[in-house]
Length: 174
Image (cartoon, rainbow, N blue to C red; front, top):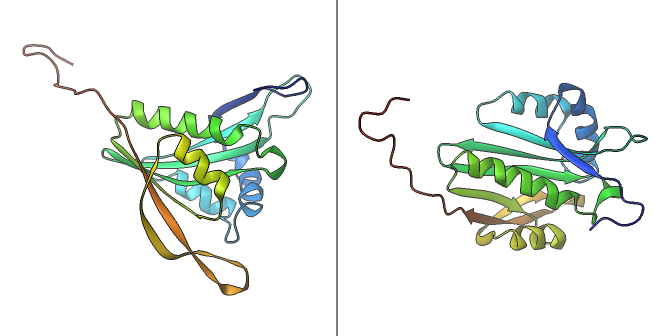
C-alpha cells in the first residue's frame, strides 16, 4: 500500500549500466556478494533473466533499488538471487520483484520454481511462503556466515498449475 509520501516503483529488465548498483545492493544483502562482472556474465547465459525495481517519479533517479535473477531450463526454473537495498526493505519491493519474475516464468510455461533461502531470513521465508512456495528440503552448510561459520539453506518449491497444451490442431500451421 502506498503511503502519502510513497514513490511509485517500476520493474523492468536489467541494463548494462545497472550492474555496479546491483553489486552494491547484493553486497549489502549477502556475506558472499556477486560482482558486477559475475552478474553480467550470468545474464549472458541461456535462460537467465534479471528484473530490476526502480523508483519512478519526476524528481527521483531511475537507479535500481532491488533485483531478482531467475534461470529457466526446460519446464523448471530457479530463483538464483534476490536483493533489495536496505532503505527500501519492508516497502513491498521484494513482493513486486517476485511477482514480476513469477509472471514471467509462468508465461514461459515453467512447471516448478525452486530457490534456496537462509532460514534465519524470516522476512524472505515469509514472502516466499505467502507466494505459495513450500519447503521441500535443506542444504547443509550452504551459506557463509561471519567468523567462517556455515548455515543451512531451506530448499523451497512452487508448482504452477499450467493449462495443458495439446499443440496445433491437425492441419494447422504455425
